[in-house]
Amino acid sequence: MIYALTLPEFSFKAVYQSCAQRTTNSRLRAALTAEWPRVSDRAERYSVEAAKPAFQNLEVQPSVNVTDAELGDIYDRVLVRGGERIVYEAIRRRGRYGRCPYCGQRDVGTLDHYLPQGSFPEFSVLPSNLIPCCRDCNHEKREHIPSTNFDQLFHPYFDDWSELAILKAEIRIGTTIDVTFRVNVDALPLEVSGRATTQFNQLKLGTLYANQATVELVQRREVFQKTFAAGGRDALESELQREYLSRCQPFPNAWEPVLYLALAESVQFCNGGWESIDEPQVLI
Image (cartoon, rainbow, N blue to C red; front, side):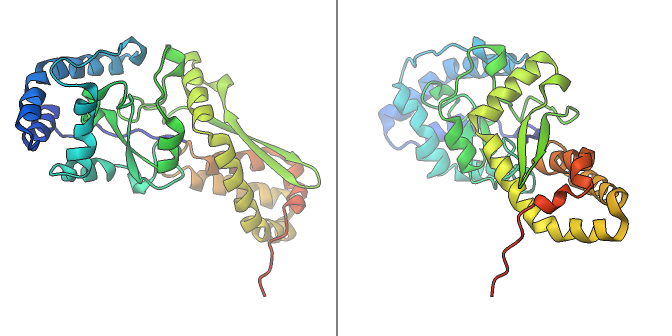
């Protein structure tokens, strides 16, 4: 589901001042330069609240020397399309194996402003506020601003939940097999369970993972069938356990290991419930 990242090495001061100096409009360039002391103070406050974490304590603050729109625009105008594009690309490439740290499933395609650019334009080019992610998660996250500890989304630069079992899968077997995913709230500290649930719902991860699991089962049906035929329930359970351990790398909180653990623990599935998986279509 999620994985941590190390903070980008870029100096915020260097990035911001380069964006200001690359601004051709002399009035705006001077105004952006004059805004730096306030922006710098806000960035220090960001780091303090991120370490707690308590992003809900960061109130919206209007710009002084420029408009909010002018301040936020340096992201699109200079970092994305202008002379500081190299910074944008370097941060975007930080996603491990090119995977989105919010969902752990789709490819990184853009940068997300953890605190939204519209409400917090002073953080529009703050490297620690720029998260490499997939376009779908970026879209679903929208302008999310936390109001309590419990609705702060996972921040890859400041949170590391790799030792926690964030996800749980449930297997229901009838005429077909239904796989559902949810946050494993019973196994998590209260604050983490609240935040993980907010992220899971906000980004619609349950639907994403369930759809992927359905395809996985169809693709693996023949393997289950042959394993069961060769050694029965015990052989299939052992194969599922092996697959679970294998799929824990590199992302233990991804949907794949959680799926295989649930299958291995399902007596009904291992006793022949796998036969309820849809038969793969044969293309002629």
